[in-house]
Image 1: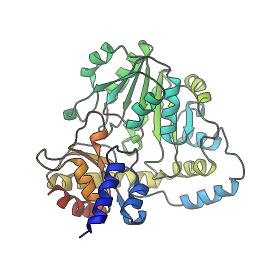
Image 2 (image 1 turned 180 degrees about the vertical axis):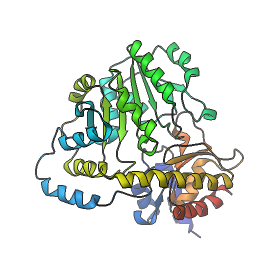
Image 3 (image 1 turned 90 degrees about the vertical axis):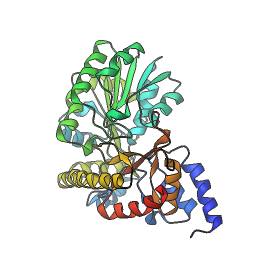
Image 4 (image 1 turned 30 degrees about the vertical axis):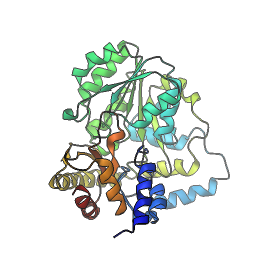
Length: 377
């Protein structure tokens, strides 16, 4: 049993770190407040590749450290060429950044617009960045019964808002549902016709199949008002290095790129990106393993009485029984046992009984089950 003083300290930690959910979780903050090393915590509040970083990454980063006496390549030439070869788009259509969050901030500054529509739930940094930039925006709510994915039924409501830009996530956040390719094609075409910007956050798209991943590289060549954001940190488990990129028509990026910070991607991160993009076996193994573990984990969560939503990503959104504890209470109880899960109430459109957990290995699922069972009781 934990002593009373430690329990009180952990409750304070919840107030600081759980009440206003931090993007990506905060394993360092919990480590300090729980007085346990990071290595002892199972962090399922951040959705990263359960396989860990690709083999050989440490050597690639160590080699790059020999060059940190120089400024980074501000053009990120080798990284852009590697992405160009991987995606089948011109390097002029790619803009690397210090994680996709830095690119979101750049786009929020660039979209000097009076009316922006966000499909909700959405990645919290979207609304936060727009607010910081002084942009006026509306949330357009999607439906839980449809995995929080936008569809054609919502388009009439969207156009009634008369937006100058539309922002959405694919896969959806925090549910992980894939948006249909037909809807994406329709929305991109309509936005082009109306001269509206369309921003699609594809931070977790690499966990999905070939068809879903191929949409954006093909679409940016056709639609000059389309901006797609992607992350390398989630799929390759390099969140501490911060690496993402934007995809857009070359003429569009030529206008946006000057608004970004110079040297925004450091030398070790650029080298890590080039190394990761060459790990084809690792990529295939990741998609196979995550799909298998996601099915296992959803079945385990369902068995505990949680209602899971179908996901194509490396995270699962659950609805807790309405008569039981809230997601915040469950998250606090699990944290005391060294397992961090995400209270999803902070996502616009979710409520106090929505809980999100990252997909993890079969062994880690047993630890998750051991923490969840008493928390739910």
